[in-house]
Image (cartoon, rainbow, N blue to C red; front, top):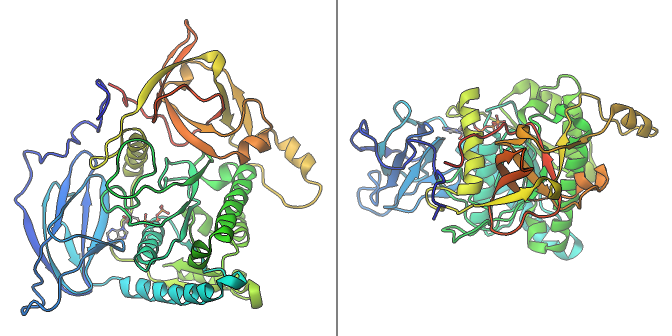
Amino acid sequence: MSLPGLNLFAPGDSGAPTARTPAPRTDDLKPGSEFRFEVPFGSSATIKLLDTNPFSPDGSVAPTAELFGTELAPNKTYTFSGYKGAVYTWHGCRLESGGDFDGEPYVGEETPLTQHANVHFALEGLRSRAGAAAARDGFGPRVAVVGPDNAGKTSLVKTLAAYAVRAGRYPVVVNLDPRQGLLSVPGALTATVVASTLDVEDGGWGSSPISGPNPTPVKTPLVYHFGLPAPDDNARLYRPMVTRLALAATSRLEVDPEVRASGCLVDTPGVISQGKGGQYEHLSHILSEFSVNVLLVLGNERLYNDMVKRFGQSTGDDAVAVVRLPKSEGCVDRDESYMRQLRQAQVRSYFFGSRSNPLSPHGVMADFSVVTIYKIVESSSAFSFLPGTADADAAAGAVYEPVTPSLMLQNCLLAVTHADPHESEDAIRDAGVMGYVWVAAVDEAKKKLRLLMPVAGRVPNKTMLLGTWPEDVADMVG
Ligand SMILES: Nc1ncnc2c1ncn2[C@@H]1O[C@H](COP(=O)(O)OP(=O)(O)OP(=O)(O)O)[C@@H](O)[C@H]1O
């Protein structure tokens, strides 16, 4: 399905077993245990749930297994590449696995899944109450997950979203962490109504509609492009974007009673849980904009105490239930080289899809004169909600600067917004993203850009944004 000459996957990532592939192994998982595994980028490994439960000799209990809340189908082979995760079983199961794992997979018996399931059932209680009160504008739980980097926040959000979908709910899942994308590229902040099964293999969420058929129903995220790695890299941009996403999420909750009763699940960046240099201000902004009433704190006892002191004291409609959950023993620290590969893989899969759902991007030529590009400016100046700060904002400078196309754009990702060319900064910021293009080549002599677009057609006459995050992705087109 790919265009001739385009590399569909990274070199070595063909999906075929390599020469050093060890023989398949089988593992019997006791009820309540999980199979933890890591697969490097450029390799692949498979996992299959066998149709037999060694812990139910009379066959009365069917084997079950799930990956971050989404059930595996028996006898189906799932293929993973550049992945770290765990298959959990409630009732016991036998797994067959093979391929190029990073180290030996192992079975862990200490998992916090029971607590996570209890949180799900508590949220279900709130949703049922909200559903019963839907005629009276009952809102389901608005949940935010906080904790340091690699504490398992995204995994918890994924698990709770998957359980909610299995219970017939339609939660709005919000990603406020620009370090990695959720149904979009890194640098994007997104809100998505998750109404269908999550995809087990492709990063665990599924895909957004771009082109071609899809094995799992697509999800349509609302996207704003922040384009920098951390909220503090431009708080004057981050906070209004959070407000904008919260408005969009709230209006979605308002118009649809089923979404309203399901509530929302908000994933936050680890850095804002550090409490240093006003980081809690970001958190407090997120909680108030999304009217969060359930705050899940992962791992850290000090953070939990801070959260209770700061947010757990209010009563009545503003009350926030602060709940501490243990960090999973399985959570793995991801080093910078892994994170970089993950970002690059997310950008590649935006254009080329995945092994199970390949996509066909299109190359187009565009004149320098038909593109309007702004660079997202890094700025450490603080954001303030105090009155009379317009002058301070003006003194802090622009958040977007016009860019004249040049070789510097080569290999860069550009966010195509809904804003017309030369609209105001606020209009561009609030416009949302219609899609992304990647700059394959720049011909300064002929004043032309060669762009890779996910769909065929002309380059939209809209404002494009260039951030420093994610970094350039080279060699996407062979
Ligand atoms: N039980 C588990 N077993 C194996 N791997 C796991 C488990 N739980 C989470 N992981 C993996 O650990 C890594 C970190 O988890 P996760 O992304 O959920 O953390 P996070 O708090 O969202 O991190 P960050 O804030 O840095 O994005 C991920 O690669 C995830 O797939």
